[in-house]
Image 1 (cartoon, rainbow, N blue to C red):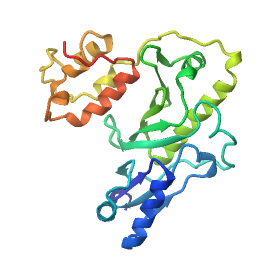
Image 2 (spheres, rainbow, N blue to C red; image 1 turned 45 degrees about the vertical axis):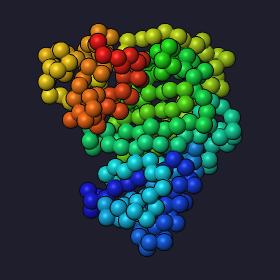
Image 3 (cartoon, rainbow, N blue to C red; image 1 turned 90 degrees about the horizontal axis):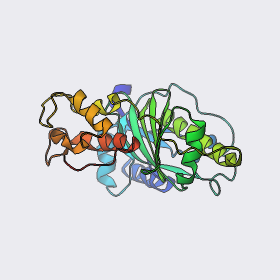
Image 4 (tube, helix red, strand yellow; image 1 turned 135 degrees about the vertical axis):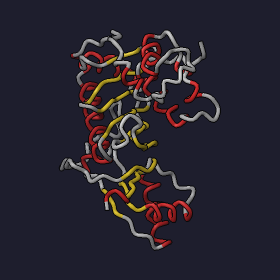
Length: 274
């Protein structure tokens, strides 16, 4: 059954091939999701297996670099046909992406989040993307640009991309490919685009609130988690004021990475206590 299966992918094709070799050696079968050539610059094949098979694989080959494991959901969208993008891996600003982190989305456990590292460099591109994406939020000092792709939250950094609320692994690949295509197209057209260094309104504080514990413990000095999110968004309070997330051994320490990621994407970089 779908609910009993997990899926993972890998930062590189080398790690994927190592996983296949290990699976063959221990006689464990798995399902595969192979990206089409059109997605070759943003995707490495994914493998699907049960929890027992995962445990056997990780025990047999503990040094393999998995991106992360999430519940498997049958892809609802088709992958594009066509050849691999020509010359894009050697030129342009994006080049190739590798998914380094894959995990369930904290704000919606039925969706996934990821962090992809880039071979290229996006920082020179961000002012041009800020000009062509009217609802983006650009923070020049933090070198970040965030925007929504439907309901997916995208944050672009000079050498990495974070995506939250992707539906499943194929949707994540398609989202990365849309970003890659937008980046390369904008970079090619940059001579016809006036770069914008405008800092627009930050995304709603609700996105910060979704990544807080929601217990309203008031240990931060504000009465509710929503009030804390508003104070973090406006810069009145540092994000580390949420003690259940940031104190050593905190009950909600698993929220630390997603909370810091969304704050960094908004240009909220101060993490000291106030």
